[in-house]
Length: 101
Image 1: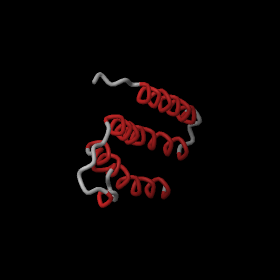
Image 2 (image 1 turned 45 degrees about the vertical axis):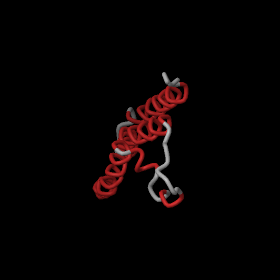
Image 3 (image 1 turned 135 degrees about the vertical axis):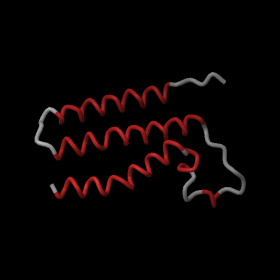
Image 4 (image 1 turned 180 degrees about the horizontal axis):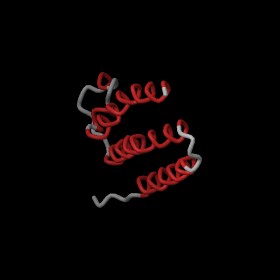
């Protein structure tokens, strides 16, 4: 029980970071690196899509993985495999996406 409470407490700031990264991908990509540029850098749409996909995947997958390890239900361990398959298919979609421009 104490491990669950501690996990939830530590996940709150992590979720905040993922939400910030999803809604402001340009800022999250340049966090700590703005000093390297004299002008505002232009970030590609592929990098923005990848950042949004990564943060959304982490927001969905992290609770699935943590709950499956904490709980005694062995069927939830199968959800980890499904989650990784979803991640691979999403990554393939991002990398094979062709721009209309």
